[in-house]
Length: 94
Image (cartoon, rainbow, N blue to C red; front, side):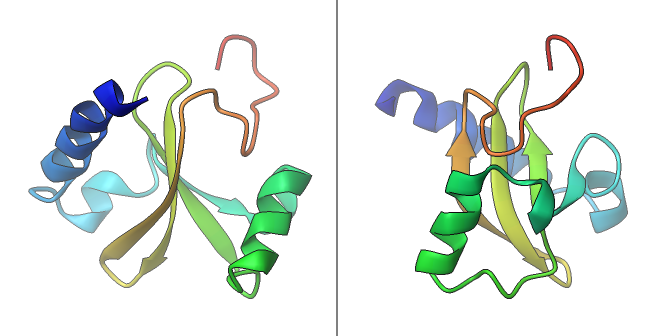
């Protein structure tokens, strides 16, 4: 979905102006690897990142998520998840 890329980049760019406490822990949260779908856990093994304690889920809007790893104050994006399949919510319409 190349047309969505500017939207994702703008979202990430807007986060740069915020302090970590303003970003992490509210809408954007820490998720244990055990909560991820099997396909995501398999992919982490393939890219040798399955030794992480968790991933961070950044909520763009609706179902869209960006998944990544956080080291200190730096977020490293791994996946863009527009259908919210990496760790589907049990809540309705999320």
